Amino acid sequence: MRRLALTFLVVLMASSIKPAAAERLVVSLSNHRVPVTSSFTGEDLVLFGTIEPDAGKTALRSAYDLVVTVTGPRHTLRTRRKERVLGIWVNVDSREFVRAPSYLSILSNRPVSDIAHQDVLRRLQIGLDNFLLPQRIGADIADTVRDDPFRVAFVRLETQHGLYRESSTAVTFLTPTVFRAAIPLPADVPTGNYAIDVKLFAGGAMVAGTNSALEVIKAGFEQYVAEAARDYGLFYGFVTALMALVIGWIGSVVFRRD
Image 1 (cartoon, rainbow, N blue to C red):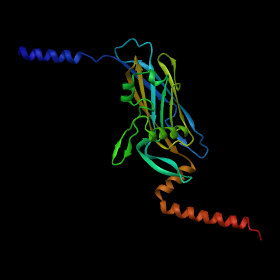
Image 2: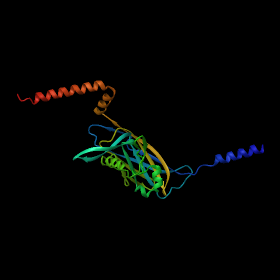
Image 3: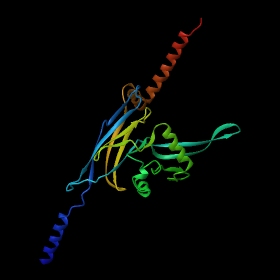
């Protein structure tokens, strides 16, 4: 009985011990669904958030850093390398990036290299240089070194199209615990589901994190055409060919010289 009572006391004491309190993030997105129409020229979304103490904690730290990573639908993409052969530019080599994000933004309040140690950034995949972009190399699929020519070219091309970006001024602290992050979407942003990962740092260590999401969809006539092409492929092809014939015939009538 004494042993049973001692065991019960230990269990009771262990259950009364709470884990160390920490910060928690509360975020809200200005728009969780972005419709893409024929007049779509891009959109800037805003992520608002606050840093709140967890239960049992009365004080917050004096300084924080925040990193927001937005990833779009994943696709297999290919980068080709061209060389001049006999005066003609031809593709001589290519590399396939497996399940690479079609959109990738790393947004922070200051350069990520100043927020945490490189080992932490690499482990958490923070920054374009640290984000995993697996390549198919022969029969293997693996990430490569950061200065790999194909990886550098792939990131550069995606950055030029506005689909990859890293900004150290996109996150602004309105107060020590209230922040906003600007998420830019270019005009040719891919449709699909987007994941938003928010990480809070203090003193070089990650102290809290949360997630959100958004969806980019086709709307209006574009949505109808996309659904028709996907669900009624044969009918869509027939109508498209018929329209081409009719438009060609109308053009021949309008511009006939005799």
